[in-house]
Image 1 (cartoon, one colour):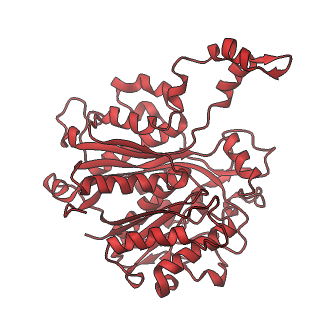
Image 2 (spheres, rainbow, N blue to C red):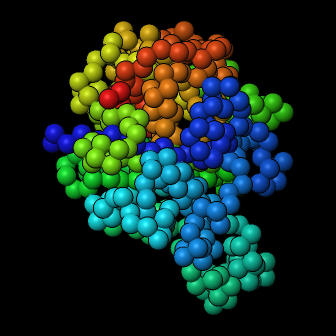
Image 3 (cartoon, helix red, strand yellow):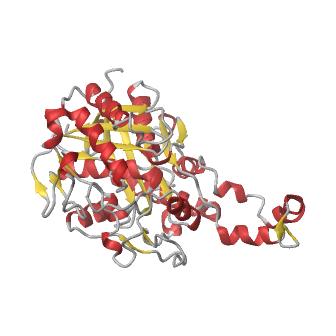
Length: 438
């Protein structure tokens, strides 16, 4: 790693609690809940009927006139990413082609890039059903008729709505960012991995500024049914949706799907100072791992992937377990996974694990897929910047064997010098980031 330091100068977020960082963090501090009964489709026939749904998005107010035709080719995932990116750009005080088309940008477009984590974008079933109907042969789906008649019912540009790289593509086009661009498709770890790669890219001198993060909409029939069939979704709180997602709690019965995006603006320190940017925090360390199993909670794993990622991030940041001020874990509310993640945190932090204040977010907004880790980083940076840790919800009785300091009740106010966040996927990919106050 070079001596180039990387800082966070802009924060953008979209989820069930708000459409920008200040709305979201204020809602966290006020113990507001974003999980409710699903309203975007009829979920009455599903075992799980709750989700964290974001407010309606008005893309005509987000995308400049020169690019508004492109909104017709934006899936919900793309809309989430573009909206959060616009909020992060504004928050950072950047002038780009997307914010001020007639003014000179205050960044070098050639030295500015985009890194976004994306998930498995679900097709619009209503749109797809019309085409599939013309592929039926005596009531059965026919591939021959799909090729000859069904596909003809789809717009020629239909696929562009569902390619995962289109999240970063639209952001780079709107804001005229001509530097490195990449997409990482590692499910829930995608957003944090994208930010980690952006951090490395800037530190190695390949760019001066990168808009990075992740976004995904998991609130759709196909994703919800998949989680239900795999036994991961909460089913016991359909009539009490605000209590459904219970990370690290003894009454946890499964996760809740959500939709959201977390986007940050990362800059090289001297460049950020030169343009007079507000600096939220410094990226101090990044770690990634894979536990080489088909499921995160293999008995022999015991959170090994999380422990490796956390240790790597802490080593790079020159931090020990006793140095950590604050931690935002993945906290999925699947009991076996929470137990494994807790073991990984204890292994990485040692005795410090029992003392470090921990905040979980999915009880409020659900699991936002590729946006989850990035939203948690926005949460950690906000807490560090404002010196407050919002209270946890839905975790009144964490199992004693977890050995974690999960605060309940009112928020905590104190000087946070550094923080960690970590995430994992069901396939075993793990990521962790360390931040510090500059």
